[in-house]
Length: 483
Image 1 (cartoon, rainbow, N blue to C red):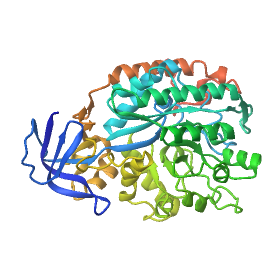
Image 2: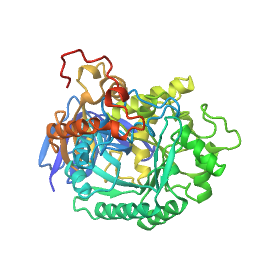
Image 3: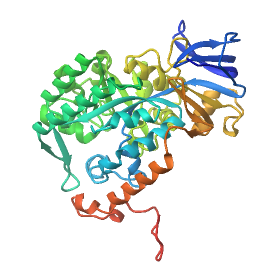
């Protein structure tokens, strides 16, 4: 096994086990052997196969993206940023997302585009929530990232025929086939020769899954000793639907089924009964969630685009609810997501202390690791996996650099991330991804989007074409050819 010695790093964001916290170490060394960290601290004097000058660099732990849909979301760039349904809670879920969907043949390329963005922003572990498909595990493994495959399955699909109501089409036999396909994906991930893949089960949405499917998914997740993640409390439409069906909030219903426990990850978890956009004082979702030990995957960007926000991040964290961070949508830039998480929480609460830099960085590292049941990622300490980034502290947007994390999250972003290692292997060098043909992947996603938008009128309930559904910011002048 090769030993790499990163010498005289200007800063290392190391893990202090006694304090249970990340800490800054100035003028320190980081040493990895194979895929493991063997030294974090001053003056390493042991043997090394390669010594790398760390002056002007900060080593920080790899970020953990706990909720994302990389097989489809890159194809929505330029389409969904300003779309929502005025009469369906401002969400884009029911009217637009079923219409704008890349063909499954473009999923591998979308995966590559999204993961390239993640890697360049310091993500080393991703939960990829996508529909089961052949070859998925190999595509993710080839990117070099540490992948957690989260195959999705459901009992019903949704649609709107009028823009103000949602219909559900139930097909339990098809759900069972999809569930088996999901279990096959889990098996392929857990047996993958890369050693970097694992899995979780992801029943798609609380309002599209039968109670029987959810209970069976929970039983399989427990048998396999993997997490379970479900979209829940993500829209006012869903909240209204669940209370209409059951007279119970989404959180109450999960609890009634016995799913609300420390093995469950709730995707989004925004619309608890006390959210300002609702009026349902008969429940106490927040306390129920707190007591359960369930986790929340927080993805602020996709919601703030539509004027929707968690109420609010610091409240969840300070109550002891474990919250991880996900990108969910494009761009898959985790550092942008952390900045947005801070700003949205502060605005939502009307309090600049509503989410601190430390809280969001912990959410993107050790909190995410806790969700995955791991203590060897999301931190830099001997015995942990060699998943880390090197940040250029001399970058213009990092200076003055009194406080490197603040400079990184609020100013520089991914522009200052120069090198990224996953499992001891370098996957980003000088800001360029080494494991993905990004140009080819982008060209294929662009081709897929063009095919998609050429036929949107066939899928839209009102028969609208692309320019009616997603108008350009400014009209295309006569004689222009567009992009």
